[in-house]
Each structure stands twice: as structure tokens, then as C-alpha cells.
Length: 278
Image (cartoon, rainbow, N blue to C red):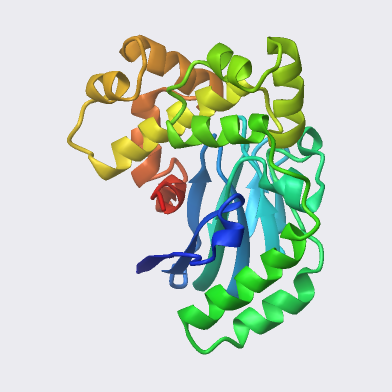
């Protein structure tokens, strides 16, 4: 059983940083369910309200328990999977690409492909777990984020360009964005990478692949060729190359893994959880 509901922040002061909230509940029963963590551009804070879960490092085959509050950074390639047993209830705050750097001061290139614990999180998780309803949860999370927004670095034109790339699903050309930001291509790339964690072209590539995976999950009757053209790829081969480079698999292999893994366990992906726009 899975329950997901998007909640709007309803706070203009947070609009530069926060997209929306997602209240999610997954009941995996007695058997562990594995969710593939795809290569993705998504930046979000997860608050665990009930239950627990782990992530497995695919290269090292090591399990790590995810803390009660964790800021998940972009995944430049498929490197981890998520394991859930029993009931898991979470609130996720979907953030704009530069929010972790400008709000919390994280140097992003060293933080991608995983999660970190944001500062001053002990108090907010206790209050969220005690909240009586969703409105109360949103109010608590808003107030917590607002404390950081008061001392946040100003959002510059490079950060705004990152927002545009995310919103366009990677469809925008990078050079005009650099020019619009008043930067040389090299300077734009340096600032963008410091704020987001990966260079702008790589980020746009992740956004495009993430959107293709989302389209496949939401519209399973569409062929990969249709998805490729709809997501801005030159052709299906172009999409397949990105799949192999970022997911280490072909689109067909991804489709099979999505429903049943080689180990016989039920598998799925988490990308659809974070794609709905505000």
C-alpha cells in the first residue's frame, strides 16, 4: 500500500527555496521491498515520521540506516537502492537546486550521490512527529526552514538559471543561461557546480533522463521511442546512451528491474514521488 499527497507551503518567503511537500506512506509488509534510486537531479529533505529504512551502496554492498532527518542530494548515476520493511511514513520537502548550498552552506560537489544531516534537525523532527494533522506539519516545517532563510546567501542569477533548467526538465541550452546571468561559460559552470553539486550540462542531462523515467512510469503504454522524442532526445539511441551512462543499464533492463529484480524481490523506483510540480 502506498499513499502520497502533495502539500503546498503557502509561504511566499520560502518560494525561492521550497517547491512543495510530499506526505508519503508505504507499507511493505513483512518482506523487504527494494526501491531503485535512479540517477536524478532531485534535492529534498526527508523527515521520517514513522518506521525506518536503509540504503544500500551498490559498489560496496553496504547498508546504512537513514537518519530521522536527511537531506538527499542529486544522484549523478545509479549507485544506491532503498530498502523498506514494514510501514514507513515520511514528509519530504522538495527544494530548488541551489537551496542546500544557499540555505545550509553545504559545499555541494562533496555531498552528491548520498545524504547528509541538515543542521538543527533534532527539534523539528520531534515536533513533526507530534503534529496532529498535515497543516500542522507544514507549519512546523515552514518555520524551521524560515530560520535558515533569514541568514541564507542571496539567490543570484546562476541559482535562478538552475531553477529554470529543473523546471524545463533539462530542455534549455546552457550558453544563453550563462549569458543571461552575466557570466562567461567557465565562470557560470564554476558557480553552478558549487551551488548545485554538478556542472550545468550534467545537471540538464540528469533532468532529461529523470523526466524520461517519470514518463515511462506514468504512461507505461508509451514506447521508449515516443518518450525519447517527447523528452528532447535526438532519437531513441540518444536516450539509450544516457541510460547506459547514468543508469548502467538499457531502458529495457530498467523496465524489467522496475517490476521484479533478479533476486526475486519486488522492486520499484522512487522517481515518481518527486516529479509533480507546485
